[in-house]
Image (cartoon, rainbow, N blue to C red):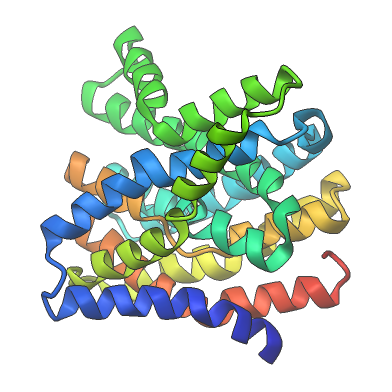
Length: 311
């Protein structure tokens, strides 16, 4: 446990440095926004394209893996939504609480950290998790919110979903990388070195940006945010572990999926909450609490799956 903690500590320490920079106003909100855009559109996209272009997709893709993650995430989503409705909040708030309880920071935190801690082979399974989060659950969120507000789901809704996917640099970079990898051709040396150089900036910049963005968040409905953090850090990985057993996903792939499910709430959930005007402060508090709590929970999960022979 201590050895794993010492390996995860530099990642969270870098988040802490970003938090201090933002808290002391050394790094402004505008600077944080531009750094986040650099990571999202350039550094992380280069890293994902490089990873995907060198992956053997047929070797990593697994329907049992996808179905296990889908089932576990859906179950937790429904549980969190039911709890929210039991508190008599609006249906829109219930949907956002459910989304907050299952969507982890896979892109900015999960890919670089799990690739280092669990080995580069972790990238393939983590990309599958990321794809399901972005394509399935983000689409469900958009459709449900749009349907609740308009009273129906129209063809325009699907157009919005399609454009959202096409404009998402993570989806585009992974898709293009897989297309390149399917050709069987190696990337030209200058291109590969360019992607490596640019992609190397993704990890430190992303972690710093996470911390700096957390500095501007204020707490609201702490008890609800604590429940959502518990759902993300504890319930979600437990449900994933059960689904892996049910679908026969074992060994390394199961370990990576469980570790990915244990990641804290993703920052893009707050962006969506702000965009739709639904409980942004509650989501923001959940991101803050879950990120702080993940210092211990992610370490514990990785230690457990390592001892269980998953890695």
